[in-house]
Image 1 (cartoon, helix red, strand yellow):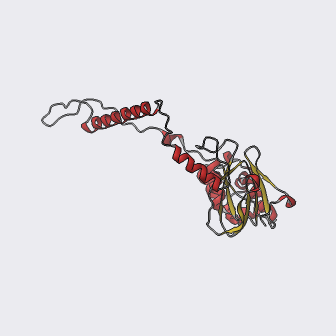
Image 2 (tube, one colour; image 1 turned 180 degrees about the vertical axis):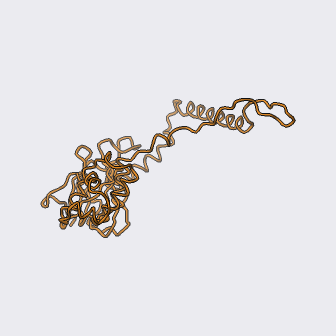
Image 3 (cartoon, helix red, strand yellow; image 1 turned 90 degrees about the horizontal axis):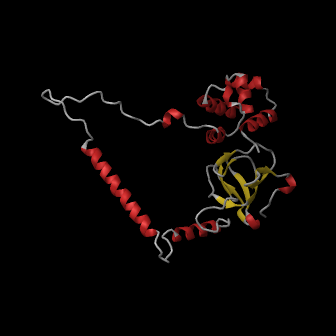
Length: 264
């Protein structure tokens, strides 16, 4: 499975470029370039520098810099703990003075009390709704229509709907594509169903999200970003057609030239 560092290293070696040449071209120190190729994020100054260096390095190699930065952000960048800390007001040290020298009593404002009242009413209504919905009525719940629609949509995409009709099965893979340039795509789903029957995606075009236990795909070139279970995966440059087998258990596995699926 090609990752960020492997993609950078393979592209550089195919172009027969030494790290020192990239250092001179990008003004990024060689040790940081090697850290990017080895995915040693701890050796870099921080996430902001990682994304900046990664973007510059990818552009120098002619790769899709936006896709690589997005893959790093999705897989390795996490929000800082400081951004998750609740905002609290500083405690009051005493009573505030009212006009005329007196002290006004400390207590909740009218707006705060009104908000508490509204929240209380909402909670009561929710409890009543849950109790009423949990009775012995034989009629199907309101969500049945949505579930049936979801199952029909999944069948139209060529994927097997889940047995409950409410969510994709745990052994299914979610797959979508985003073209960065014109690229030929042949996508096969479960039972040999042709989900994308050998057509060209245009630059900026995205596909729906398909669900299946096993995908096989042939790409005419590397000008596409694959989103496997929500994670962006780039495709290494190649002078020949590129193929993958994709499952939940084994992830994205490259196919040999004779194993590539065809849609003809």
